[in-house]
Image (tube, rainbow over all chains, first blue to last red):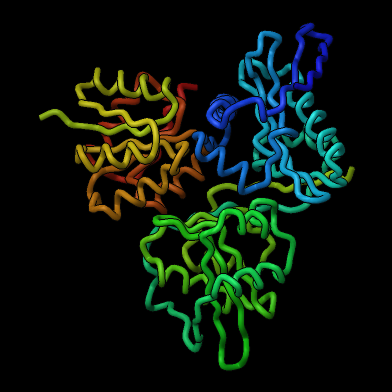
Length: 293
Length: 132
């Protein structure tokens, strides 16, 4: 176990950084839930969700940190995803009664140092719009705002037959084609929507759409028995919002009873309009931020 | 006849407080601490009203609402119970077919009355129970 002890001037309290790998998934979920009990958008987790989160998003439990008091009581947590030369800070939180003691900064220092130790030269994170204290702290650490992202939902329901796009040929993608499409996808997806996340989550399905005038595109998504997640699409012309509409429409035509959640669509993505036309609504917004090490 | 309410809430303190206030007002209350058990509780009990937290640790409240509406609970009042900002809460609740929103934290003086209003008139509303 790596101990890092530091005394704060105000309270003479010793904060200890314990690798998250010392805890079970249930313990980590419980600690995390306590830190987010009064959050703007509470998103609690159980042990199973925590385990999936760690696996899908390449979170390193050795590099992730639980801050404890000297008696071992956990009071804060921060997690670090690692992929090649990139790192991602996530699930950062402090138990409410222990705030205002610079624990957030303590964790950030540990996580950024961890990112450097593991060879990352860039760290990224997302902060919910409206979380001003967190945003201020990240800016103090040198993070820069990159873009605003939407987390969007679409309730179950078939798309309107009146708005059915016409003149499109639809085919289903094989697993091999899905992998090939993801390997060549344009743009810079967020960590959660990035190709490694999708491939690890698995249960991917894909649809290709083509028109007679050779406009074409694909949409790939994660499919569970009752929910569709991680919708990602590409068209051979980036601003072809009508084709994007047809791609998204085809998902909900095929799976009309499914609830849908998709994360981190850039606010400036011209295809957002196509999501809205298909009944998606913004659940909340995040700001993506990065720090070059 | 006593009205039966299923409360789907993962926070134990919120759940206990909601249950206490509703029972005091004469309701029969079933508590569920996550989406899956909440969904099952509604299927089994066919309650008069469902109060569902949007942030649940397994499947979130919106998905629970969607599943319940799909499983034939089209007319059961379902109220989103959430700490989300009011605008987002209203939009999300409306999109998913909730009959209303009660925002947290619970106002112990008015909470039971807010729930009773949903049972009596079923109109879409957002009730802010913030005591401040």
